[in-house]
Image 1 (cartoon, rainbow, N blue to C red):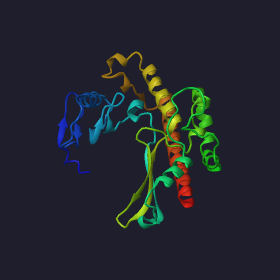
Image 2 (spheres, one colour):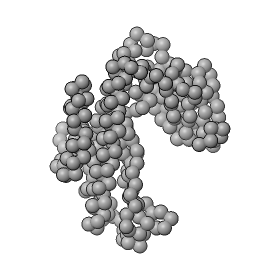
Image 3 (cartoon, one colour):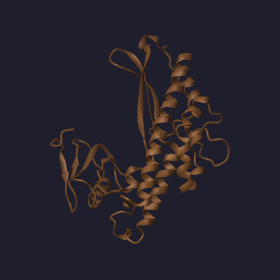
Image 4 (tube, helix red, strand yellow):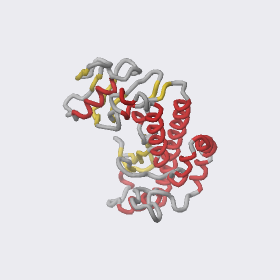
Length: 265
């Protein structure tokens, strides 16, 4: 991205806000959040705003917020490690049937997805019986998660092991794609699921409690932050790093399951 090609600049009692939003309407509430974030004393140089910018919790989604000496948990968000993975298969477009219905059913059977909104009964978005590959990947995550839970026992009761290799809801997806040579790719998008959400919300609350005496001076209470070197800063960095690993393993398990399902069709 060329630093000189931004098309809109906001600067009002804070660092510059450089916006790559030409031709894209920006919600005035998002602009207010950007201005509030730009006022924080530890923002490094400027904010960078992407065309998909929209209102978030305290700060906007779709912006890059560089900080120095502090971190804002709400700016990181609760879908920690959200990302994508893609794999090119050996199939071409001509190998696919006219109707993809059976392939869709096979993928839906292979990967739990969605969410059960009621509190009782089985959660359709979690594993009922976990396949062996979940155990294999959880083995890379279990030890550090136990260390984090020793400090924050509330996280033990979250969806973690039973969400590993599951899709979730919202903008998470699994799709078959074709490239320029008509080769078939599998692409999917997901994050750290229930446990990432719990980690994000836990530390957002802790940041607000830590700043209780100063929170009235913040432009928005959801901009509460941890200073580098504090106990909660270090614990948060550890938990975020773990959640990112969980998200990566989550995508790898799903991709394995999807490719297995395709091989049987």
